[in-house]
Length: 338
Image (cartoon, rainbow, N blue to C red; front, side):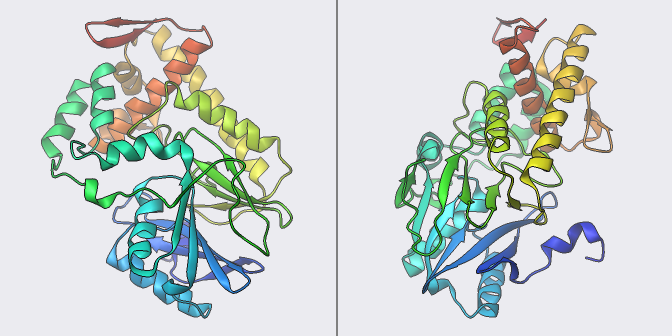
């Protein structure tokens, strides 16, 4: 990986603050490619913020990185998990089964986990329903044809402890607190070590990309509204170093939050404009917009990213309705905006 954009993905354990090491772990796709977990020394114990995706390659890379700091997976006392996406949560579960580590997760993820653990659950059930609701039947049909319907409820388990804003995180030498930041998921948390000026941001604030909004099995009515409120909440705190789940550590949470708020403001304007020009459904609006920094056409995206584009567009349209800039009505099961 000679490209400097990918340097943060190189395997190893990298000290980012006294007693805190960033450990990038691999992901099984060409999108995000890696996820950062953070190993925090607290006296004789070791806490990890997030756990990675339960893959053999990820496990081996984690063991190798921990060895660099004189530790092993059996030394992990607890996992503080920012949210219940697979790349953050599932390896914490597999290591708990083997070594008995405690797993803590935000209480707002309960509804999603209940669906994921249901024997009737199938991959992307909620997303397929939303695609139909937003007029994206062509995208939905392709995803249905590709979907593996094998049940996967065995992958998921409840945490040992549900975290809320007043929870004791169990660190003795390093006072930390959890801050609920719904939006990316309804139960997303960031973890703050305020004396050290550190924010373990999960997917709430990422340095190079905009996080997906509401991609979960039990989304709220307006995940983008929740996300923008959570960004403003974080912006109101003293500035801290940004320790993200994807991308390099940077010196300022505030700088990136300002960029993300400006991005969504611009996106709301663009989304309203394509409705004014005649787009009626989220699918039609998504096809009229451009995507990624390269401003790619909707039809040039793969089907998974087409799905994400429709759902993101729907989230922006719903905020415009809440702001009373657009109206919405349901016609034969499909939401139309005007």
